[in-house]
Length: 189
Image (tube, rainbow, N blue to C red; front, side, top):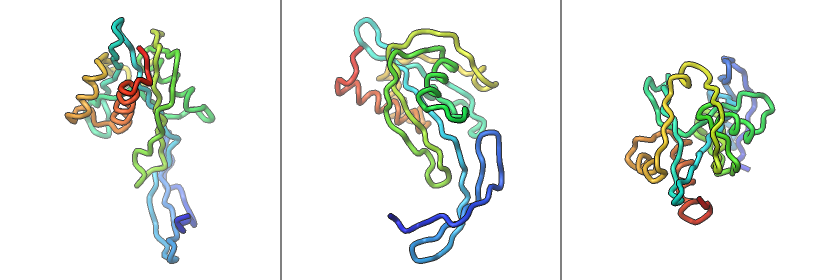
C-alpha cells in the first residue's frame, strides 16, 4: 500500500448528482493535507457499431452542447449512473436507447476509465454495442433535445480523434479501443 490514508471528510456542497467534499489525508511521513474532491456516481459511454453489407464499420455519435465548455462536443452516447443501484450495463442499455434510439444485441465491456483522478472519484464504464436495431429514443433535458445524431464510418471517427476534433476523453478511448478490436479481428460485421 502507498501509506496514504483519508482521515476526515466533510461535504461542502450537495448538488443534484455530484457533491463536493473537503477531505483530509495523511501522507506516509505523517503530514496532513487537504484536497477538494468531486464525488460522482460515475457514468457510462457506449460505442454503437453498425456494419454495412460489405462489413464496413460505422459508428453513431452525438453532437451535444456542453454548458461547462459553452460549446458543442462530438461524443459517443453516454450518461450518468444516476439511478441508485443500477448496474452500469443497464445504464448503458438505457442511455443508448434514450440518446440515439438503438438497442444492442451484444454489449461488450471495453474498459473502465477514471477521467479526472486529480479531482474526482468518477469512473466511466465503456461498452461496445453491436447488432444494433432501432427503438424509440427518449431524450432528457434541453441539451439532449437539441443534440444532433451523426452516423460516420469508424475510420472517419478515428481520424477525428487524431486531428483533435473529438476531444472528449471517453469518446477518444472508446473509439480507439473499438477500432483496435476491429483491426485485431475481434469483431465480425
